[in-house]
Image (cartoon, rainbow over all chains, first blue to last red; front, side, top):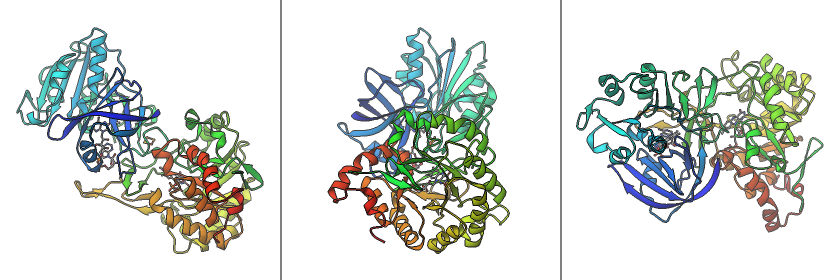
Length: 244
Length: 302
Ligand SMILES: Cc1cc2nc3c(=O)[nH]c(=O)nc-3n(C[C@H](O)[C@H](O)[C@H](O)COP(=O)(O)OP(=O)(O)OC[C@H]3O[C@@H](n4cnc5c(N)ncnc54)[C@H](O)[C@@H]3O)c2cc1C
Ligand SMILES: Cc1cc2nc3c(=O)[nH]c(=O)nc-3n(C[C@H](O)[C@H](O)[C@H](O)COP(=O)(O)O)c2cc1C
Ligand code: FES
């Protein structure tokens, strides 16, 4: 964990609700780690995953869902933002045939991971699930590093159904099409994935008081005992999460 | 300029103490700064047995603060003594204040006694805001007679200074303070969190899974200050003040209200360096208000 003052260098809408923030001044971070951003007038910082971190630039993708993210959507380049950086454990990257699965805004943290694999000479498969065509973002960016499969709930683009349904429909099987999957998205999706296959890593969310392990606000039950999503997570072994 | 204070005959490096539940068991904060500038460290509330605590969500944001309903997650007193306290003592020489929670008198007694027998522990802080399971779930700290008899029983078994941490969710906090001092408390600390709630407009449900939780942060500072002042006027034992302290000025104000030391809670969560920055800002703030020895201002506004 570091406290850093980041300089916003860009804020660009990607869909009606998702926007991309780029910053300079952040230390390098791993795929699956996150930052806690201070938002003017809000007491708690907001946890946001690293979408990309390279060459001194931090990219975050944010979905407008409430008061804090709404304020962030109106931030303009040149603004200084206080952040706690380098939080959480991040994804592993030992798969030889990786499968990446994202749902909604949960696709964002998979981007740096796809790049990591590509830079090691492994082209992963990534399944991106959205509600509708209008909500799709980063399809071309992912396509630079990965084979992209798009799924939409309403069928307006790609497979009709959610990301897990797309995997089942295409007959994806562990050992054959992939040896390990890496996923982020709504809890229902992650739970369904872990029931489908245990050889994976899940990036979880929780309402956080601190983001660096001090308050126990984010603890979940795992087969190894109680674990803090912000400190021992947010990425957990799919086989170890105990769903409440 | 002197920022040291005295607590139960021990000289503390500064009056600033991270509050229970907002600093874990302390050792992880040693990665961020040298903990020896602190006056003490209040450990996460510890119970006899390991507890997971409440279901998630446990946290909700408020104007100028937050609500928490952690439910006393902790690894249990034996693990705290075997692992957490040695880990902290390896990086920190200052006062360790062990915070004790419980859901029955027996549980409080066993836990407090074990912690007070631990050589690294300087004082025991009894959190009487926990629900009394046998007493229908009402907090021990909301009934003066129950609180007094609990403190009396615990005090007989504890060989270290016993601080009783008062709940603000009462009609008269000075009556509660008098009751626990009658019961044998060597000092009191206040305030614990104020019961509150938030509702998610989208789901029309409470944000906190167990409906309500404890409000803390700058929002409660004026209430806490008034209560510290009430209690300092009512009893003649050391008073440790807390509730919304965020700056060196807040700490001075708490001390003028009657606190001989201050605890800092929520501020640590949004700024991991909060306690360090308050300690470092104290001399300049004292200079501004013509204070040479910080102890001189304790209870100035009684
Ligand atoms: C580890 C982690 C990584 C995340 N990564 C991203 C990301 O890359 N992009 C993105 O858009 N969102 C991400 N989120 C979710 C994001 O933190 C919330 O959407 C955001 O905090 C909502 O803030 P708000 O003020 O707009 O909403 P409000 O509902 O007004 O927020 C009120 C409070 O609830 C908290 N809260 C609300 N929703 C969530 C949620 N889903 N998860 C955690 N806390 C929540 C807020 O932080 C705030 O404290 C992540 C969450 C976590 C825990
Ligand atoms: C996340 C969190 C956890 C807490 N856990 C405990 C606890 O275990 N025992 C206790 O006595 N008080 C606990 N408290 C209360 C604080 O120690 C303190 O009394 C209160 O938060 C008021 O101070 P503040 O406004 O500076 O936060 C907790 C507070 C917070 C925010
Ligand atoms: S959010 Fe505070 S411990 Fe995880």
